Length: 331
Image 1 (cartoon, one colour):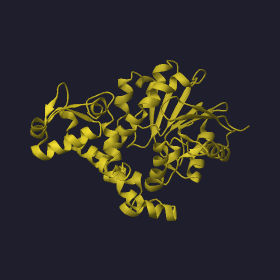
Image 2: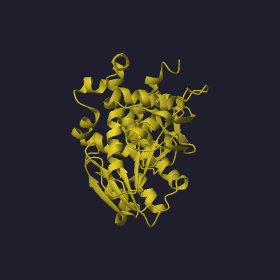
Image 3: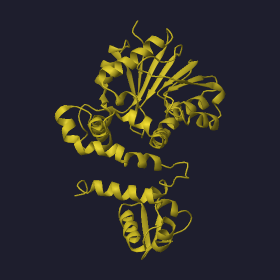
Image 4: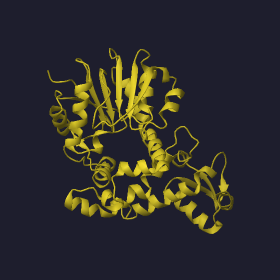
C-alpha cells in the first residue's frame, strides 16, 4: 500500500515545497492559520496538507493544529547549508516525472521516453529552460555534498598535479578536493550551462586561483595535460558507446602516467535481499529520461577496457552509495 501511494506522497512533499510551507517553520512552532497566511493558502486545506506532511514525518503536530518541523523537514528549507530543497524540486518536477508515465514503453523498446514526450532530449530541454537548468545544477551540487566530504579522505591525491573534473558542474566536488590538497591545480570542464554557478562556488571555497574553467563538449574532446581525470555521476547518463567515447577522450588527453577516477554507484550482481531501492530506481530513471544506466563492476571493467584502460580497482565510499572506480591506461 505504501508503494501504491508513493506518487501521492511525492506530490504532497512537492506541494509543501512549492508553497513555501517548510520556509514557514524556522525557530518556533506555527499554527495552520499562521502558515496559511504566510503561504497565501486557505486555512482548512492547509491544515490537511500539514497533517499529511506530519504523517510523512516531515512535520510534527504538537497540539491540535499546531506544528513544528522535524529534522527531515528542516533540510527542505532553502536557507540551510544542508538543504536538499533543489534536489527535491528537480526530482518532483514534471520534466523529471512525465517520462515515467511511459515507463512501460521504455521497457518494451529500450528507448528513452523523455524524448517522445518532450520532442527533445533531457539536456537540450535543460539548456532551453534556464530556471530549471539552474535548479538542476543546484540539485546536483546538493547530491554531491556527501561525496565531496568523503572523497579527500578515501582517495590518495598525493603525487597528482593537475586534476580535470569532466562534467564537474558548479565545482562542489573539485573545490573540496583542492581545499584538501593545497598543491593541486584543477580544471573544471563542462558546458556553459553546467558551469554557470561555478565561479561563485570556487570563490567561496577559496580555490578559484588554483582552478581553470573550460567549456566544451566531452563527446568531442576534454582538456589535455591532466594526470587525473575525474568523472562523478557522468557515466550513468549515457549508453555504452557514448561512455567509451568520453573515456577514450580522457585516455587520449591524459599524461603518460595519468589515471582515471570514475565516481558512481556500483550495482551488485544480484539485488540484496534486504532491498535497496534508490540505485534501481535511478537505473530506471536513466532509462526513462536520459538513456543511460547504472552499472556493475564487470560493466565498468568492460567500459574501461574498451576505452584503453586496464581493469579498474573499486573502492566503496562509506555510507553514501558511491564507489571509486580507479583505472590506469593500458600500456
